[in-house]
Length: 253
Image 1 (cartoon, one colour):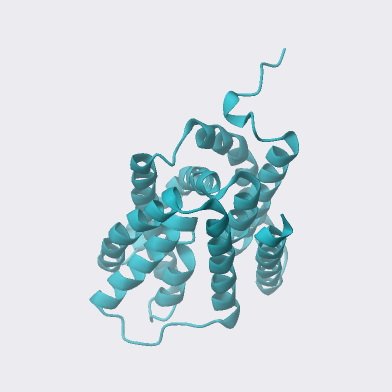
Image 2: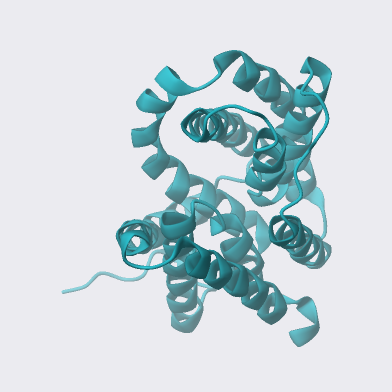
């Protein structure tokens, strides 16, 4: 016999939970076949479904646990000095983002998250890259911005990716540096969320519910990558992000 639904879910309908799991699966699929897009898809839709202060820690825990497996190899290949510089900026940005997430009006946060996702999508679509000379202060500043976006909406990736892809390092080194930086910001964000009271029993239950769907999407996407053009997948991911933003705008409710 099935037990009762945990009290943490009492004010979420079955439809809401089902849609949240579905969105998590799609976000994992995008991350698996393109390497990006999970937060840009999940956060606008997840914020509309369960609220920003629940959606953010759910994605943090679902994605963070699965990303642990990539860290040992990333440590060997990454430019650890550059990662340390960027992480030093993120130490400042992440708690500030978490503070805003904890205390700002949820409706305002939904607008901010949709705006951030739209801006990051335009950045990715444009193919813009930083063309200046990478310097320690600039690297730390990019880390602070990435950390702010990460603490607020789990959107750490686009600023760091756009900055590092402008360098002359090998693709494998850049990818490893990004993974290692994400690992560092995941730790910073978890601590900040824990201290701020954002990680609740409700978020833990929901993370446990969506993690298998997110993992399934991640696995399926990584497998599917080998059977079609990466450019097609990239465009599909952009379309999914745009659809998530448009359908999650607060004007619809």
